[in-house]
Every structure is written in structure tokens, then in C-alpha cells.
Amino acid sequence: MQKIIEASGISKKFGDTQALKDISFEVSEGEIFGFIGPDGAGKTTLFRIIATLLIPDKGNMKVMGLDSVSGYRELRKNIGYMPGRFSLYQDLSVEENLNFYATVFGTTVKENYDLIADIYSHIEPFRKRQAGKLSGGMKQKLALSCALIHKPGLLILDEPTTGVDAVSRVEFWGMLRKLRQHNITIIVSTPYMDEAMKCDRVALIQGGLILSVNQPEKIRSAFSRKLFSVKAPEKYKLINALRSYPGTITAYPFGDSVHVTFTDDKFDDSLIDYLGSMGISNIVINESRAGIEDRFLELMEK
Amino acid sequence: MNIGIRDKAKGISKMKEAVISVKHLVKKFGNFTANDDLNFEVYEGEIFGFLGANGAGKTTAIRILSGLSAPTSGEVVVAGYNAKKQPEQIKKNIGYMCQKFSLYNDLTVKENIMLYGGIYGLKKALIKERTDLLLDKLNFREYGDRLISDLPLGLRQKLAFSVAVLHDPKIVFLDEPTGGVNPLTRRQFWEMIYETAERGITVFVTTHYMDEAEYCDRISIMSEGKIVALDTPANLKRQYNAASVDEIFVKIARPGNKPHPPAPSPEGEGEHIL
Image (cartoon, rainbow over all chains, first blue to last red; front, top):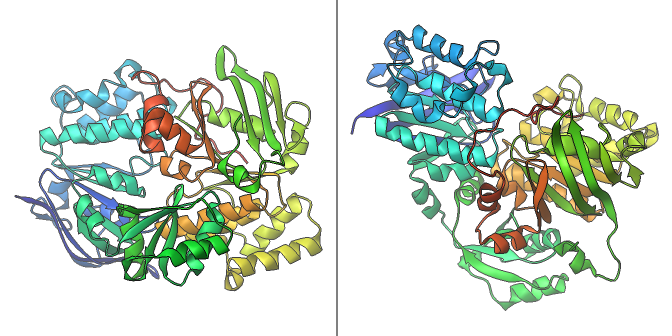
């Protein structure tokens, strides 16, 4: 399969801050590829390099067969970029914004309408409204329409779902799935681990380093120890007690339970006795399958 | 109204005190009803998640609960004070932290603590005492004289939370408290929240991220100005036969599939209240 992005040894520094450290990965045609990591991990810097808006200090970034530095003029015609901050013209109407972007890229809304129809139809009833007066979910749909109107080969979405409610996020991921049939490759970043499962492959990124690249299911399976989910009514006491138990390796709160790993991947009655002696009762322990976030935590420990 | 799990563990003999009591709260902006007959209570030391889609009316309700806006009708009592008649008393008895704008970037850690302590009327000696305590607890000694802008995001958020409860409020309001931080910091942050609730401070959390909701004792879900669900996450999952709060939310938070127009209210959901 054709490679849409080939990054090798990419580094970028801003003053004293090493934003990216020797990053390498590849993205194939038609993939939805996610970069999952907290704020400050380097996601935006990396995306700006791919979008030809920044030059790396070191390394090689090849996008759709072209070098991102020397081939930037050609590449820009074929990339759709939706930055994290809403950056359309607030005082132009919905339809004016869309027409503007189409014109800049030498095309018309009519020509590529089929590509955006699914997304744009939601906001078309409001086409005369100023972009600045749209709700968050509608702004997001307009921004996505504008990023797609020139039918790019690569769509770059920088934290498109940050600050968006859970219902709109589901809709948004549904739209991305539908774009696959148009053979558009998508790279998308998010600080939210649960969204990793919606990508074909993901890179876990932290402190300018890629911790792991794989299919989300495989990242979960790579968790190296047996994971247990422990519940008791008094959660805070439970966390502290589990941490002080000699057989515990890690104990982290996860929603209404605590995810725990033990020496030799097992525990015995002494754990229950121990927790009991700390005044904790009604304990429920189950073996649990690690999620992306468990694996992320494990990789951070190294 | 049922009581949270935490309360049962501490014994039912002593009934929990409601620190937020909302009865028939209605808030209108012109013809638009942002809050349509809300009724709920939040108890002392409870971690309460307040959820809803954009435009559901959360921000309007929180502004009323924090004394920034008066209800059109209904009775709202927060920390023992009436929201319509005693909003200034409410402000003194609550803390507020939002992910983005809680601290002054161009002041140092110590200066920020001093500023907030002063605003809440703490005596100088007490501010100093609490500053020392706080810096020790967060292992922050070395950062005391650093500018906020020089701190990593995770530390900033932990500090912002500590500052929001510096004056021992009855209730602290948190707006998407752990957005954007790494999984480890996120867990340390939740442990701080648990500890605070253990001290008897009520923690009122609003968030778009349903996995944050899973950490709460009870959650409410708002849709179109009404509360459509309110219970412990476990009970709601049973009731809706769902594996996660996220699943419940998607099922009930927005009726129909219509594109929702921007709220005609003067305050958008994205607005940050201080």
C-alpha cells in the first residue's frame, strides 16, 4: 500500500524546549491514524511540520511522495488542515467561508459538493449566519467542510474534538469514517484516550517521543502484566491501602474502581486480610482487560 | 433522594446535609428557557458530576449556583445561602477552578496563593501557614518563586485546584478539571479530589468527558434545560443497560438528531465564569 507519510528522525526545538525528539513513523493511504497524547506532547508541532508550516531541525518528512520542505508548494494544494483553534473568518457567513476556501484552492463548492454533502447538510440551513455566531458543533462541521472542499489527499485534524460534547464527538467520528470511501487519508490528534479505539492505528506520544505505534487493540494487548480491577465503597481509603500492600506493583484510580497489578501477577487471601485490617470491606476484585490508558501509564513508568 | 455510596460507608445514622438544594429552578432569557424546573440536592463531601451537551443549560445553572446570576423563579440554597437574596455570601463560601484561566501566568506560585488568599479575606499569617503547607504537600518547594507560565501544565492544574480550596469553601466547582493532562497526572489529580471530598468539601464537576464522570459519586445529565437522569454511575448503567457513562450520555443527552441552533441566551456554554 502506498505510503502517504514517511517520517524519519524528526526533531524540533523551540528555544530550550525539545518539542520533538527523533520521531519516525509511516502512515498508509486511506488510514485514520491517531496521535494520542497530553497537551505539550508535541502533537501540534508534528502536524505543522507535516502540513509544511514548520521546518524540522533534523530528519526527513515525506508527504505523498514529496519532501515537506522542498515540495511545500505542491503539497499545500493537496493537504487539508484543520487547526486546533477555530480559524475561519468569524465575520463571514457560513457560505462565504466555504466559497472563499474553494476559490483559494482554485475549485468550486459545486465541484466537490459530494465530498462534503454529509457534513455540510447539517449546517446548510444556517448558511447565511456569520461563522462567529455558530455553536461549537456547527463551527466544527464548517471547519471540516472548508478543510475538505479542495478534495485533499491528506486531511490533518488537530484536536478536532477538544471541548466538544460527547454526542457531537460520536457524530464527528462517524463523519470521518465516511470519508474513507473517498480515499482520503486522515491524521488526527486527541488528548482523549478513549478516541484511540476509533482509529485504524495510533501513535502514543508524550514529551516529544513516540511511545508506541500500533493498532489500538494491539496496544491494549501489549500490556505486560495481569490487570485487576478492585472496587470498594471507600475508594480513597482503598487506593492508599492498595498502594501500601507489599504485593502491589501499581495502583491507579480508574473511574469507580482501582486498577492494580501484583507481583507475579497474582494475589492471595492476605490481600483481603490486609485491606480488612485497614477498615475496608465489601471488596470486589476482578481480572480486567487493559485499556489504552493502562498501557499508556505502563509506558510512562519506563 | 438516595444517598451516595460514600455516605453508606460512613453510616446512615447521621443523615448527610445538603449543601446545594435546588427546588423548581427556572431561568429564562426572554422567551428562551435555559433551566426548566430543575430539582436536585448535592450533599456534603460528595463528588457530583454535572453533565450535559453544549447548550443544555449547564453554564446557566452553574452561574446561578455560584451567585453570579439570579434565578427567574424557584428556590436555590447554596452553602446555606439563598441564591437570589444572598449571592455575595455564596461567593465567599465556594471555590472555582477551570482548566484554562485559574491562575495568573505572570505572577509566581507564592504570589498567586497570596492573591487568592487575600481575595477570600484570609489573614496574612494564615496565608503564610497555608502556603507552606500547600508547597510541602505538592512537593512544590522549589517552585515557590517560579512564574506560573514556567510550570508544566500538570503542576499548574494541581496548584489551581489547591488554590481553589485554600479558603476551605463548602463547595468547589471544577470545570473539566483534567482535560489535556497525561494519564498519570490525571490520576494524581483525582486523588486530590478524593482527599478534598474526604475533608467534607463538596466537589461539583462539569465535564464533556464521560470517563471523568465515572469517578463521581453521583452524576446528573441535562438536556434541553431539564435534568433527564440523576443517580450513581453504577445505578445509571444498570438502568440504561449500558457499559459506560458515555453510552448513557449518547442515548439520552440529546433528543432527536436535529442540528441544534446556537443558544440564544446571552452566555454561551464555552464562557468561563470567575
